[in-house]
Image (cartoon, rainbow, N blue to C red):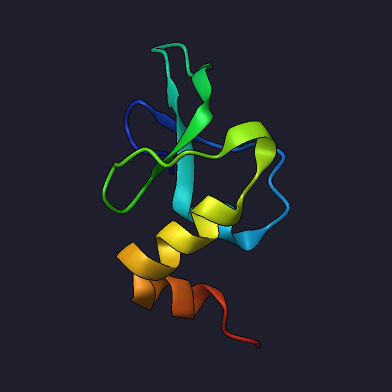
Length: 74
């Protein structure tokens, strides 16, 4: 379930996208797709031109437990 005003990336293939979403209008359409929002603390994280390195780094430094849980091998 998405947070109010935040929608998840619909075509996400990487599991770390479970931790990020995008600002959405009341109709549920993405308003700003250039700055993903952390679903844990609601801060925006720069991800220029689809570069996800900042998202990995942010999750690892700001939310290490969620980062570790997301990287466990089953």
